[in-house]
Image (cartoon, rainbow, N blue to C red; front, side, top):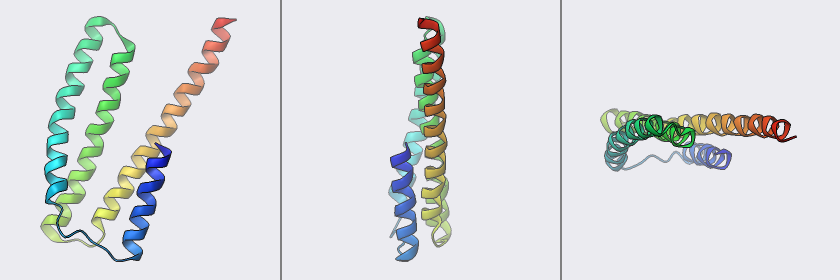
Length: 125
């Protein structure tokens, strides 16, 4: 997630420095809408199955899907703003929003892995 975040930040900074803007964001709008619909369905179904099976890994996977759902909303918002009003650099701001969210999720994943590793090592002894 950290590498994704770094790549998005570099891309956004380069877009601003080079004053580049997309010709259209219609593809981003279509992808975002399809992703939102798909991720919402997958999230709900994974939660349902995870709860029925009492499976924490499936429920955790559902939470990852929920993250994709939120990221798709950031993409949709920035793409719509640009497509409708041609607001300069809003696509770069959308990239920065996705980068922030990816960084936050990466940090949370590392913290969770670290705390589970610490609790596992004390449980195993």
